Image (cartoon, helix red, strand yellow):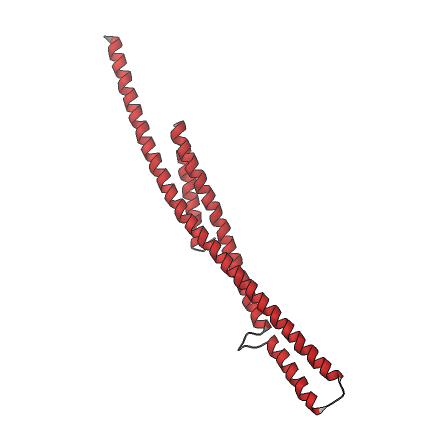
Length: 188
């Protein structure tokens, strides 16, 4: 009789333990689902930053190419004026020399059509925006990696039945999500 009672007591304890294990598995499954959702949102933000980086990079490259084109045209006009000055004096040439010098000056600094100075300022602004987007992209990459690690740890905690892994996974996931949010809010 004592053996039957002992066996029944062990069966009850085993059933209670299995019920706790099933609850643990469900809780960790919900943690994995939440981490996966956060991972998806973070990857969307990461792609947005990557696209912004590429767009600003192209804009900066275009601005510097336009700057170089204006620089070459300005140099051609300056050389044209110098060549005309080296010829024997002629009143008709004087007008062409002045026109070439005026055009070279306009290409260097023209508020209306963006001279070289204005283009350099615009290109530097595009470079700053590009660098900022690149920084955001890399910070979000770290958050994505941390969320992926958190999902792996949470999954491993179910297999190994180690609750500490689930807690560590939750902490890493929470930290990664907070970092991604701070990046999106331009705090870091």
